[in-house]
Image 1 (cartoon, helix red, strand yellow):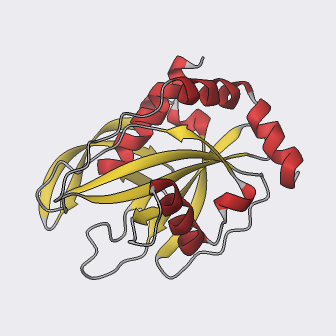
Image 2: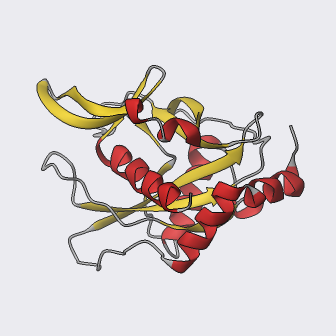
Image 3: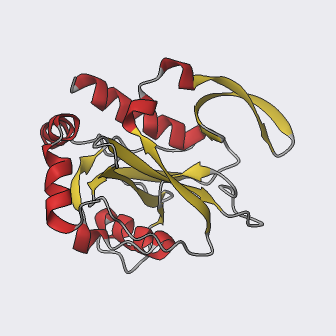
Length: 208
C-alpha cells in the first residue's frame, strides 16, 4: 500500500474525492450560532484509499464507560472542545490524535465541513458537533487509546447501498426506540453519527 504524500495525492485525485473536495470548498457546512449554554465538539470523517483503490471511511467503536452517554457507540473520532483549543479545527485534530494516535495536522488534509449537528434527545447534553472531512494516506498507523474498543474502515461504496439503510429498534437506557440506522457488517450506526453519514452520503450523491 502506498504511503505518505503519493498516497494522499492518489486519494485526492480519485473522482469521488476530487468532486467532494470541490463541493465542500464551494459550500461549507452550515454553522450553528454560538450561545452561552452550548457546549462544542468536533469529529473527523477520515478518508483514505483502500487496497482496492477505492475510498474508505474510518470509524471507531467507543469503549464501554460508565457515565458516558456515547458509551459503546459506533462513531467517528472526536470529542468536546477544550479551553486550550483555538477553534474546532484544533479540537478535531487533538481528539483524533488522543483517540487513535493519528496527527491530522501532520499527515492529513482537511477538505471541509458538514453541517453542525445537535442531539435530538434530552438525555444528551446541549452540545453542537462540527464534522470535518479529512483526507489521509492509505497506510495509516492506528494506535487506539483506552477510549476506543475497536476501529475499522467502511468503503464509501457501502454507504451507497440502499439495503444498508433502514429503521431499526434501538434500546436506549432500557427503552426501545425506532431509529434510522446504517449497518455495515456487525456494526450498527444510529443517532448523531447516522445523521453525519447521511450528510456525507448526500454530498457524495451530488458529486456523481
